Image 1 (cartoon, helix red, strand yellow):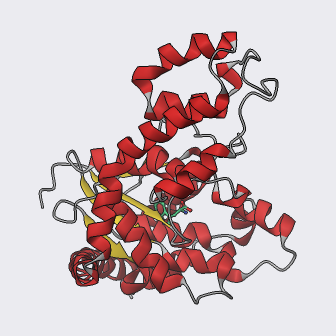
Image 2 (image 1 turned 180 degrees about the vertical axis):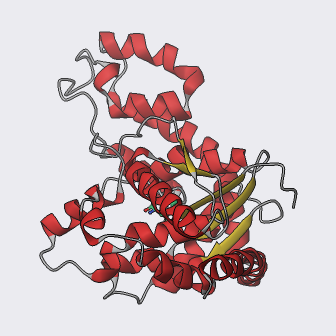
Amino acid sequence: MSNNRGRILSGMRPTGRLHLGNLEGALRNWVALQNDYECFFEVADWHALTTAWQDTGEIRANVRELVIDWLSAGIDPQKSVVFVQSEIKEHAELFLLLGMLSGVGWLERCTTYKDWIAKNFEPNYGLLGYPVLQCADIAIYKADTVPVGKDQLQHLEMSRELVRRFNNTYGEVLVEPKEKLTEFPDLPGTDGQKMSKSHGNEIQIAESPETLQQKLRGMFTDPQKLRRGDPGRPEVCAVFKLHTVYNPDETAAIDPPCRTGDLGCVECKGKLHGAMLQALAPLREKRAELEKSPKHIDDVLEDGNHRARAVAQQTLAEVRETMKI
Ligand code: TRP
């Protein structure tokens, strides 16, 4: 691998199948970055445990599902290192060491932590350490660039601070990472709010044609347009928003008849269904192929874990050396 390109690390928690918000907001970006950077993509299964530590029954299956979603969207394991966090024990050691440099008050000011404990009264130690573990993930690969959404900006800022504190204390071994913000606007879910697993309004990447149709049928449009003939307002309509993403060539033709009322929502959703099926067909086909060869997924992960481990071991050796332990 060449070292004159920048190095990227990013990750996702394996919490179930990905939805279109993940695809458009993150994954497409990762796929494009593979050509310009040396990329490490991590399945952050330890991070998933910080909030869902009781229900581990699905976690191994979810790791594989996530990797299948990534590969079907175009992550290329020949170009990028695809690996599982819990397989690289060096993350745990660096996490422990960085924990010594992490003030409890500083960690308690993390917004994602505060939001979580506002809803759940007994905060756990693992969750408090979430940003420290995330910093270890990034720093152990000396990644300089981290593509993330805006919800992760504070974690990135904390990673930078922690790396700086480490380097100032022990010597310049780690690299301060900068974020690469995804520009894509939020995609609306079936209820018109931002598509998110926590809202239960998501459309999965791998949705079957039938469930896709059902979800689109139930989708919110302009609340003032109750039946065909009523004038609609594309600018407030979630279905129209999805047209702009999955059916861009037809949006100019859909806008006027929606406004006059000549185009009903049922018909408009039918057009969207057709366009989305077409746009997502390559991903669905790739997924079907990948599902038939579990051995291939094993091989991808074995190779990725191996490549990741080699880098992580090297960094950790330097960390121990500079810390004199
Ligand atoms: N916290 C990230 C999320 O929930 C996932 C993650 C874990 C991550 N480790 C990372 C993202 C390192 C970027 C870099 O989306």
